[in-house]
Image (cartoon, rainbow over all chains, first blue to last red; front, side, top):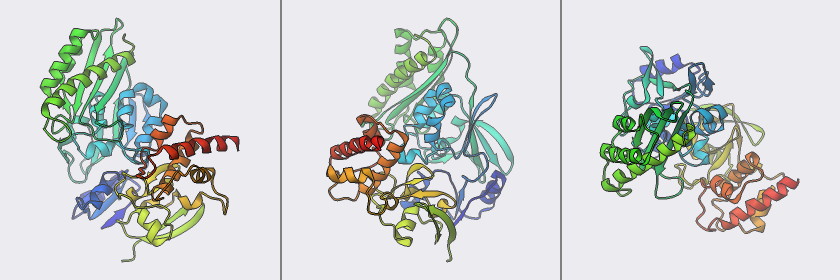
Length: 286
Length: 158
């Protein structure tokens, strides 16, 4: 096994692309080191990306925010501008692990670990976040939801690294929220989760919406029918009821010890309602 | 195998060591440097017994590679007391009997130190939340929370 700490993204990409055996990217290590300890991962090359210029920064640009791949989730929570613009994304990132894990774990790691129950992913998908992928063929920007393809699998090719996550600049009267169900109060893996992102017009009518569900399918679900239910409404009771029904119907959950199919469907609807209510209030609706 | 040469700062002292690429910082501290205060409970970041402070961030040293400490600042439980003078948290843990077997104690003390550095006047809920990454199977947590509350009062007065 080799450990390297390249100073440029090009060097990191070159090392990953040129490695003969299995290679792993190390940012926070809160998934990688656990997998190595358990014997589930034995990379021949570990590429620590934390010394690469700019990867440990959150940048506010004219287009919005660029969150570097090595930024720990704790830092997201400490960024006032990001918290104000994207409270749902930040609350999702802050739910990952303990204080100790927060100091290390990253949203890009959460995304690339490709767990169906990843907390930050439904919030990012609802937010319409994009991933900047750098690889041997250059740089491309893709929607976050196209990264995970199956549990533990991503669409990234050999040598590719996600450099940053992009979040748009907020339109006025916008809000997002993320909620998950776990059997305990903290420190657990989502049984079901929901992220909702809304923008209202000047009369409080929802003009755009995105609804994402987590832990109810092999990958995060972007539920377009749920967004259609919300658009044009002021989030009245009838709309919330339809939202729950559509979300429950969109789920393709598994039965396991943490929740049955029936339970997950029902909770997905309830969480979508509550997340929508919270996002609506954050957007300035009543 | 020669290993990776690492230069770092531990409890204010410049330290150099050689480690293997897959060796955790916890193993380096305990097995190479003789700093056995940080404990290995789970080895997977769940129990907090190996808590240290890395560049002002509380982390589990079992989830950090030894090689990653290059050029950084590491604080361990060994740096908490000043000579024979205990840190107020250590003193209050003794007074409140906030430990039994003691395996989790260094991790709790480091986590509590980090908590009070960032929030000198925490509510009970903030203390319980802030220490939720540390597991204790003996005390039931209550005495630990009382000790941290009491230490916070002492530290504010200092």
